Length: 466
Image 1 (cartoon, rainbow, N blue to C red):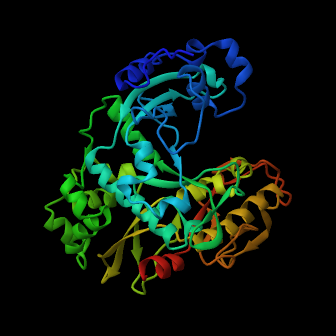
Image 2 (cartoon, rainbow, N blue to C red; image 1 turned 180 degrees about the horizontal axis):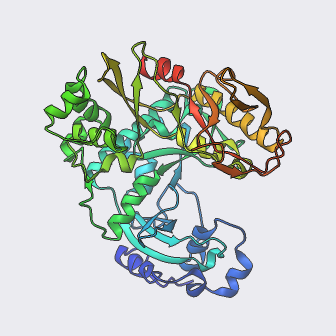
Image 3 (cartoon, helix red, strand yellow; image 1 turned 135 degrees about the vertical axis):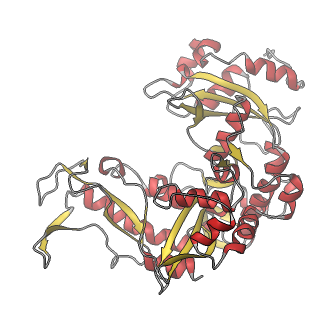
């Protein structure tokens, strides 16, 4: 079959791809063929390859348009209230071949061969629509910006080293900044052999984190970049230092200083009671204008947590996470759960400690949850899910010494796990979410909002003191 573009000419391929903009697959492909050939959800990319570009979907090591070294990738968008587009999910790239990658260097890796030039096609995902009717919004070629490439190279090397250390089964997206190693397979049983361990490792693929994909979208859509401040000003700096090294070097001069002393040194006036106080203080220490976002943190989806320590090093509070919806958590599985997704991010912990009634900056630490602790949290999550499914949230009432009656639940508490627990995170007991099954003890059909917490003792022992 004669193709309607020249696969040996990059401009010809790109021009043909750009004809998709503003159209759906149903409009540009042979409808009769499509109706008989595609089935199920998530086949947008396969339909695009087969029925628009005219080649069979494949999983070869070389790029889709091998003669010009360009890979084709399609990805869904969501539309914000301000009409801007954002990524609906991470961008999944090629499968990681654990056996081969340990014998490669970055420059000649399968990853670079496959992804150095990508033809990106972003379509608007709309609930209830057939994939053939999603409208394609953005089409363009993309390749690595030089500064980002240095960070991605370090990410690739981090992933490869873990595999070489016989720890492919312990890979986590929190290990890296822009380039992740996401699970890729039908289910948890999708595993592969790894070269230096007998433990089967989940199948994983390289992926750009969702925050990084948002920056790709913004660059293709020519959105303004003035809203971001950079930690890494040049390729030369990216080659010499990691994001972690840069951040710690900027915080270190302020170790041992109180909040007031830091504000004085920075010649800065901030409202200490404002919710944004610590976020703005972090930006100021890093040399980022307060009205801007930290570009590298946005791309890497780094979650910043400020912790106040008592004099005995125990955090004043446990670390909370967003509330979960009862009717959603019962339909999740652990691998794709919202809580696991959050814990597989990279965190920046900023530790202040009470000293003579003042808060003094002690240290900052980049952290992501170790594999063994994720396994522990999975037990907490699984018990929580089971309690809701069984309709056995409340097990009784107790009255404290002041005569206040409270509900005792079957949710996992601090005695259940050294890492995490579940307790309320609501304005009051009337701040609720609906239940998928009536609670047997109280006969309630909705219940006070709860969330997962990291135990303060865990934060002290495994993050602050390590």
